Amino acid sequence: MAPMLYVLIFLSAMLAFEAFYFLVQGRRLQSQATTRSRLSRLATKLQDPTREDSILRDKKSSGFNVDAALDGLGVGGYLRMRLYRAGLALTPGRFILMSLGLSLGGWVLGRLFATDPLLMNAPILLGIAPWIHTGRLQVKRTLEFEKQFPDALELLIRALRAGHSLSVGLQMVGDELPEPIGGEFSQVAEEIQHGNSVLSALANLAYRIQTPDLTFFVTAVSIQHETGSNLAELLQNLASVIRERFKIHGKVRALTAMGRGSANLLAVWPFVMVGALYVTNRSYVAPLWETEAGHTMAIIAAIMIAFGYYVCRKMATIRV
Image (cartoon, rainbow, N blue to C red; front, top):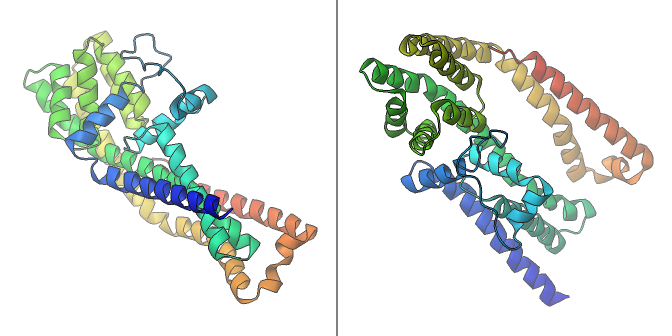
């Protein structure tokens, strides 16, 4: 049994180190040209599969691998989109192996250094760390895109008023602005150069980066394409509306900061108290997981905490 344990320790340490390296180092290198090209290649595989005019279809790999297995289970596309929106040039298979490696590493560490059953099994939850990290990166990247979007519209408006075509203006945005909006618009210009229509390329962009402002932009371009109106004027009005919305959004977040903080505190505080009692007076909280009545109370408490957190966050959320 001892040699097998050593093998598990080695595998878990290797996978955990790889997970940490790619999640952190991949984020640091996001602004470099290498990562931009990797994300660009991934973007060609993330076009809306329901569109018949999508270009560069994803090639089916031969033989068995983790990515093919995930695609067969129907979760490969979701993971690929999640990683792309987080700005990480990783494959779904590598991401799943990272999560499993962290869970395995936590399980091994719990068996080696803990004697209590709860502490032995709790480190398995390390496997959800990559999911939480990618979720935070996804939100951060989307917010950064929304902040850069008015500047991209201003640059596109100046290009149109200077006499350039829309495709040239999109390429200028991709060349001049940093990530993430620069890489996304470069991908749009590249799709147009490969023969895709402007509306189809913009629709693919809206499919990859799902923000309301981008949907309004695609709608404005579609209206101009059908009616022949002044696109520069339409985009100028859209940029003004987006900037004003950001101002109002900042004021609303400042006014609702106390409500969000209260929701977070009320959701975390019960777990902090249970953890403190577990460390100081274990016998006091042991009935929660040792008795059937304790299991029932713990489930009811968890449901009430989740419901209260949802209500508090809903009250503090105002859409602008």
